[in-house]
Amino acid sequence: MTSVLTHRIGAGVDDGRPFRLGFLLHLDRDVPPARAYREAVDLFVAAEALGYDSGWVIQRHFRQGNEHVSAPLVILASIAQHTNRIRLGTGVLVLPLEDPLKVAEDAATLDEISGGRLELGVGSGPFAGAWEAFGRDLTNRHRIFEGSVDRLHQVLDGAALNEAGEVLHPPGTGVRRRLWQAISSDPAQSRRAAERVASAGDGLQLSRATAWQGGTVAAAQIRQAESISAYRGAWADASTPPRVQVSRAVYPHPDMAEAVRLVTPGVRRWQSWSTHGDPRRTDTVQEYLATDHALIGPSAGLADELAADPALRDVTDLLISFVPGVPDHDEHLRLLEESARNLAPRLGWQPSTR
Image (cartoon, rainbow, N blue to C red):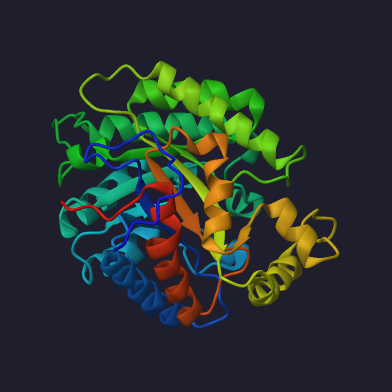
């Protein structure tokens, strides 16, 4: 690969590169689930060949968000059988709707199957319908999430689980070292949450900075940068470096007008899924893209925008997704290739030689 470095982001990782590159996989196309899962395997195989460090899947129950991913660890177990190196992540598993002990068992099993490649990201999840179906109170989601994370830590750390002194099997030592927490974007919660993640020794996951929650994209980026600073300031484990993952939506294409044409069906599909009164039901595709902060166009311009993003200065992991809307399979493959060969190298990334 020929370097096209024009900027540099990232705080640096242990192999000397500025950051690791991952991709976030949405499975919301209107295809049968079996086809969606086969295509997911193909995309991970292609990403591994391109040098991506990791691939991540989300979790949506009952196809909320119109995804086919209610059981991300099951999907990743299938992907593990077709890949050898790429790390396998959840971005994120909705932990308060699960039994932390069962999550630990499933995660530790998957980690063994994959040869120690699982990156377990957990969060609280935004969909009220899922919380209702599982009999949980969404208004207490932060408290419930914190309790669930504490229990997950205990199990993965090898705490005795019953009077007989039995512990998690397979052991969760590796998963515990690769645990991530996604935190709230609420300014009233984010700093304390970031510090709590750091005190636990977990990686910090931040989603995309958009203007859907009010304010501007720039303000959202600054809030994320402040959360990262709080997390790094609270990090106390001298034996291992902090881990910071930030997600951004990109759609690299040499022709801006053609790129907008290609994403328009996906934007319209996402708008059609929004409920009445949702601010995402904007009148034009351009308005939607601006509020969603989807970076679209030639790779050089996208690199300029990413390099100016204050939240990316201290990341260890850049997570890219090709939204809004999810491209067809062949286009998804093109986007993976363009991002790995022309976009990410402009920011200093190269595939690991390890």
